[in-house]
Structure formats: C-alpha cells, structure tokens
Length: 224
Image (cartoon, rainbow, N blue to C red; front, top):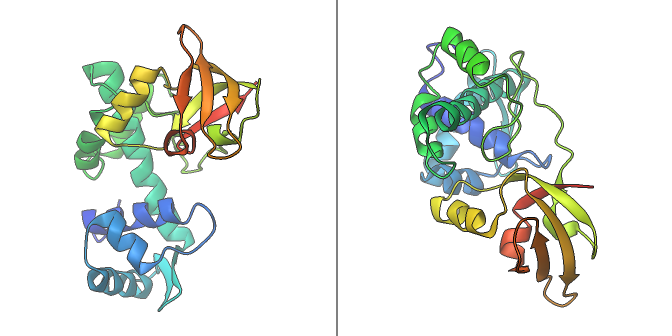
C-alpha cells in the first residue's frame, strides 16, 4: 500500500465503503459519527481525497461521497487485512470473537503483503471472519453475500446464522449467550405482526429465545 495513503485515509475509505454498501453516498454527518470526528474535519478530508491523483472518492458538497475504483481497491485491501487478522487472532492466538476488533484495527495498517499471504494460508483460506463477514479475495474482490436479515423470516422457516453486524463486545457476548453465532441452526416459531418480536428455537437449546428487532435486524441468515 502506498506510503501516501496514511492510516487515517485508510480509515476514511473503509468507513465510506461500509456506509455506501446500500448504494447511497456517505454523508458528512454519518462519516463523522462513524469515525468519531467533527464534520468540518470530514469535509476537509473528503476534499483532499477527491483532489488526489488518482482521486480516491467522488465528493460533492451536500451530496456526500462515494469511492472511486482506486478508493474501493484501497478500502478492500484494508478490510481484507482486518478480517484476516480477526480470523487469525481467534484461530491461532485464542482470542474470542468479541475481543478481536480493536486488535485488528491496530494491526490492519501495518502488516506486509507477505504477512497477509501467510495469515491467509494459516487460517486455511477461510472465506469468512469470526463474525461471519466475508473476506475479500487476494485480488480484492468482495464475494457476494446472499444472507438475509433474520427479521425477514416467516413462521416455521429454518435457517443457519451466517454473520452478525456487530463489533460491540457486550452485544457479541449477549448473542453468544443466546447461541446466535455463525453456523448456528434455528427455527422461527412465532412472530408478532405488531412489534416484530420473534420467538426462535436455536438448535441445541431447550427454551425458545425471544428476540426484538434490535437483534433480528443485525443477525443475517441463510434460509434452509
């Protein structure tokens, strides 16, 4: 990765990638919240990224920002590093899935391409990280994620948990207590049409689990 692309720039590009997955531009406000910085700082950085040769973002005031082809490539490289590191920390060093995010955030900027290749080999070229997020390929292509939100299931449907959209330690520990980890099998037993509260049977557990939208919209499954 070019020495001109600083850790801060990488963080911006990664956040823009995450915020634009739905096809909409990333707003200054959403980026400020995501990165924990002031909106004025975001505006200055977006202007800088748009003025680079080649530009890393397409930015228009009051209309937000999207990654250029080059910017997307850089973002995917950082994301690949991050998710490989999370997998390696869990598989090799015994970290739990709720501990790895902050460690990977520190290391993602500094590993060499050779180290990246060795990590990929060490974890058996896994396609997903511990949270179930897909790992971009070595040639920086993001695999297609065909999982759907648990909230979309209908009564009596069965599914396998594929990923969880969360990094918060307490939230991840709560999901683990409920058995809602990648690979878990479940069946939807009931759903309230008024508040979308679901009753779910997780395989291997005797009692039905009651889940609200705060969880069901952040757990993604493959319907069986």
